[in-house]
Length: 500
Image (cartoon, rainbow, N blue to C red; front, side, top):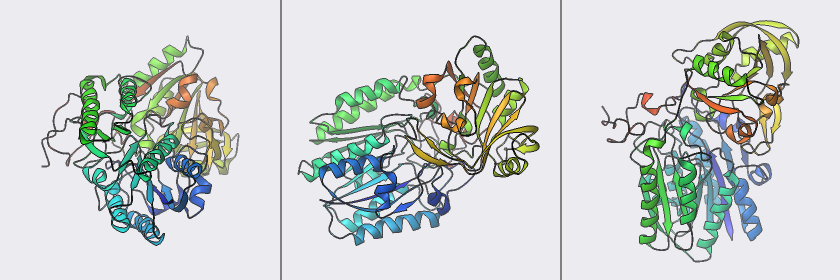
């Protein structure tokens, strides 16, 4: 079986301060760097991404893989038009040149918005469909934060989404996509499709699958899969993409249309019944630090705070200073925060050397309302080139490159400063600059949920804080203009009235 494989991943926050350039995809950031040809297989093998899992399953099945390209960029604002078209053209032309195919696998995100296209994945799948024809199956793995569109469902033979957030099952989802493709290649399909869009946006901080209500929803989803419904996905969506199809969805594939419709209705109804449960306590910066300090007095493990509104995994630039300001104002001790991305500050620390004291206006350069650089005298405690392996369950042994980096200390607070962004989802992102996370009283992570995979085992408790940042914890706070009319902009919140 000759199977073409390719990947193009981006999660787009249309309200974020910076757009994704071609260079961002070439470098990868918190993802592996762009690869083409055989390197797609060699450079992604054994790490926690969809391509890795699909390749392992395909090789075990004896399929002949034709790798085209794989790339990803850290979440940000829109993908620039030239970047989208360059990557899409390389993938589509490569698949067209591959010759007769029995199938295509695409490792995508599902929430890509380009400068010129609202539905980046739907357009890419449609272009691939045009070159392979109607009879070659196209199977796609998606992040559960995908904002699935009708076009994506219509153009692909199957969309298979992650089931964990933190995403510790990205490679497993690639394997699941391979299993579905194997059924199609064996003549079991095509399968009937059912698609549902939920009527409310779900805040990302409450999409975690380790806690309710998602824990029970995904358990029910897994229990419904079987002979009649071989593939079933619920995607809570990415509630920061201002276009009509933003939001949570369910996609089901069944032996019959009735099977698919019944499964989709059951899961959509279950999600709708939990609408009020997709909520939780969010602290202000000073309030959250005071609460963490009070808990830490009697704790033997660190209190972990999610700096959720500057999550680089949701489009933030990872440079806001609200939580740092709160830690310093409260005179917190044995506290650490990371990663604040500020290449100029990292260079200044490198030039000064370990042990030096430097005066810096740190971070705060993204122009976020209510945020500003933090001016202070910092001791340079450690320096790094920013290259290290992140062995925790989210990055899964991935190689990160944050560029020139440093550990800076102000009072009892240590700051991980880097030159490139990646959300703080691994304990190694403290250790690479000499901070032992388990020895801290308070850890402030620029992440919303992914950090939980590696930090819950060491945490006394986890608090969610909302300092000024580009990804509001409450989607109702975003200045929406293009959602579909009637969509509730938060659980049990007001309906969007329609474009002005």
